[in-house]
Image (cartoon, rainbow, N blue to C red; front, side, top):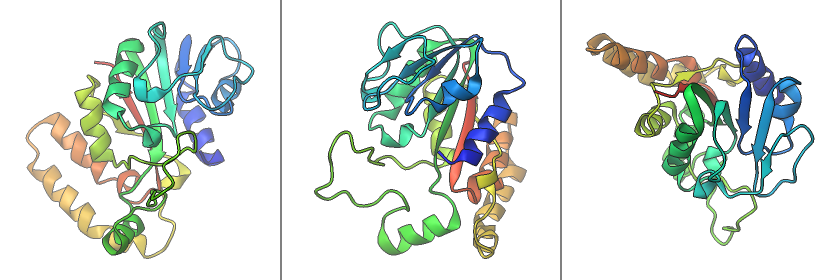
Length: 228
């Protein structure tokens, strides 16, 4: 996860109060370090060793969901993890179960909806950072196997029982190349047309989020969803 994305996430969480947090996958433990003291942070990771600062830590495969005794959280952060998981709906349902009422889930992942990614898929059939894995399918190598967009995450989060998710702005939300906003105009116009025809508040909010620069131009997604 890019340092600027980490800073944007911590800033977003800064005005909220959380007593219990789950970091899954925990990686090198940056989230526990940046959240600081006074918060009980638990961690899960299959391949990394426990970093300092965690109350509890499980060596566990997230493709199997969460450990049975992993529950009671105000906040769950799944940073750069869901793209590695082959059973994301199971994991999201376990996140929903482990959250307290009104608890929040943060998901960060590469975005494959920005213009250059769609162009690469049109010509090669593979998205950036999701290469062909012929003879490279080796557990433990942090393979990117499940590509995500905002609309796709919306569907999975709603199926898991969450309220409609919202995108969190970050520095990577900006287009990297000058021509990308132009290439993104057809998708923006399409979402805008759907927004005008939307009949419910949630449908309007969906098309507003889907047509935003964070959805159409960013190489990275940060999404927040609340347990319904």
